[in-house]
Length: 79
Image (cartoon, rainbow, N blue to C red):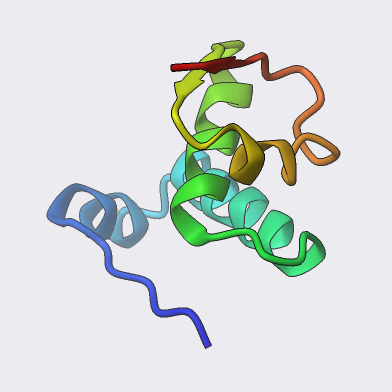
């Protein structure tokens, strides 16, 4: 089982019931559940990038490519 650690900002956001924080966490959790081998950090990176329309610059292209199906709008750039 994968653990999850929240920083102070995330805990405050959840406490205040900020829907955006909860929605990003839900999207990342769904991506992990449906993508074998995906890690929490990779799912959060991809979900965050998708929510802003960003590209992701990474040295771990293969890891992020696994999540491409869930986040097709994210461009992955090799470092």
